[in-house]
Amino acid sequence: MPHPLPGAVGLSHLSAYDWEAADGVCGGSPHLHLVCTEAYVVTGGRGAVQTLSPDGCRELPLEPGAIAWFTPGTVHRMVQGGDLRITVLMQNSGLPEAGDAVFTFPPEVLADPDRYAAAAQLPPGTGPETATAARRRRDLAVEGYLVLREALAAGDTGPYLEFQRAAARLVRDKVPHWRELWQAGALATAERTGAQLDALASGEPAYLDEATAYEAGPTRLGGFGMCGRRDEYNLPGTTLPYGGE
Image 1 (tube, helix red, strand yellow):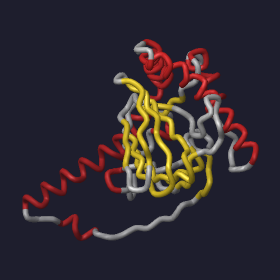
Image 2: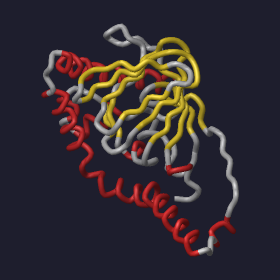
Image 3: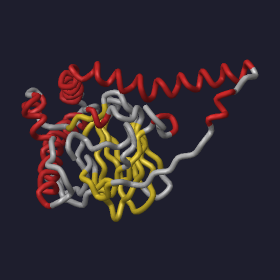
């Protein structure tokens, strides 16, 4: 992967949705990542991130300067509290865009790959049609999320664990492609560091002759992401749109 960001991370900026959901909360589409840890760096406003995991239901406050991160398998939902804006750092750049993120749609949708794909896909662009589809997708994800949350709150981990298994089944066929992306991105970056350490130890750091700098700016503003309106960078593996967003 040419010129990856440090650590081959993904990068985007999000403004949390202010659409009210069925439970009266304004925010994004609950989902999990299967192999990626995600971090929120809060740059403005107020809000929270609601999470579901085997250790229960949590709500982490978000305010400027705060950082929150969640490991693979953790369902997370960004909640708007007022002008919330965050920078997202994503492990294994390229994998979320390749399907590592799975929405908390109801079980009957997760069980049918074609139905899931139709519900997750958005029309291209940033106009009203895309906004309507993004809100409909968010509402469907919240529908499934509320069932999982209610069960966890009652001490029943069964529905949550079944959602994790259903998500894993849904993406199983994509794993060979994900492995290629990982090998070209995060793994290659780590191996390059190993080669640089070997060169330093030998006293022949020829790789330093290739030192240079790069720059980039957002190439799409206000796209419809999972959690909110998203500013993206057209860098290899960084924030290419999620499945047509």
